[in-house]
Amino acid sequence: MGASALAAAGVALPFDLGALPAGDRSAAPNIPIVVASANGIRGVARAYDMIAKGADPLDAAIAGVNIQELDPDDQSVGLGGLPNEEGVVQLDASVMHGPTRRAGAVACLEDIATPSLVAKAVMDYTDHVFLVGEGAKRFALKMGFKPQELLTEKSRQAWLRWRANLNPGDAWIGGPPAEGARTSSANRDKVHVDANGVEYTTGTINMCAVDSRGDIGSVTTTSGMSWKIPGRVGDSPIIGAGQYCDNTVGAAGSTGRGEANIKVCGAFLAVELMRQGKSPEEALHTVMERVIAMTEKRLLGANGRPLFDLTFYAVAKDGRYAGACAYEGTQFAVADAKGARVEKCSFLFRESERPRA
Ligand code: ASP
Image (tube, rainbow, N blue to C red; front, side, top):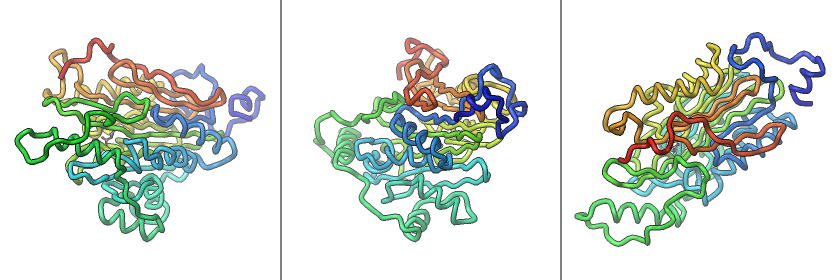
């Protein structure tokens, strides 16, 4: 029986609704629920099934994102992720477990397809929160993760094409035909053109799950910005930026330009705003406004609108949820008692207001 049915039947909920933020109290509790970026549509269905059968919310969310991590056709995370400027795939991920107030993260992890599980192992088996680079890989190997080449032929061809078109004066020429660099994902914050006209790709999955007791887990996993400088860390593995979870309030996470999110600790800020009484949607809009207020001039158009995409997702402990972004058109994935589906993110600006780089 879901929480709303329990509430309707007069059964006491295992948490105090009165302690929840004041925003949109009219909505009955809608748990269990799983919310993710749009590329997590298969994952939210799996995670929902798991929590409906009693699985831990973080285990369920991680199992959800594992689908994309292990899918060689998704060029935004895990196996097949687009590489850094040297053609090496470096992965970032972080997790938080609400009931036990624990967190784990890895960054610049090479050769292991499921950084979300390595982040969880950091949480479960160490006194630390965050391991990076070679140390993270050595830890993963000790934990029994199997190393493998993560650069698929499709992603190698995309890297070659980028490299060959980077600088007409260098020794890299030719490259495969300009096709196929885009990801298969439905999420629109994928392919961008920078101020010099160079195309780069971002992509990530964030997934937050609330079980029928109101316990929460959250995870974000990514191959980061394509063609990044080796060692670059985005927002995804940073607790409080790429995802954050407080079991008394809710969880939030992000996909898109990590550099813009890191400066506002967007996921933490969203959860704090929900704690203060904002609904998930109100909280995410305030976070997006803060992102824009903190954006340097070179990344804003003449109309003051951002030249990049960034999307936030949030779910409150009672199951209210939202996805929000700067420009109209992005979607996010939800699974609850009504099933798994994609919904439209709310947005600050119409697509026609997007400035040209
Ligand atoms: N947020 C990720 C990063 O900056 C990339 C993305 O979501 O597209 O690494």
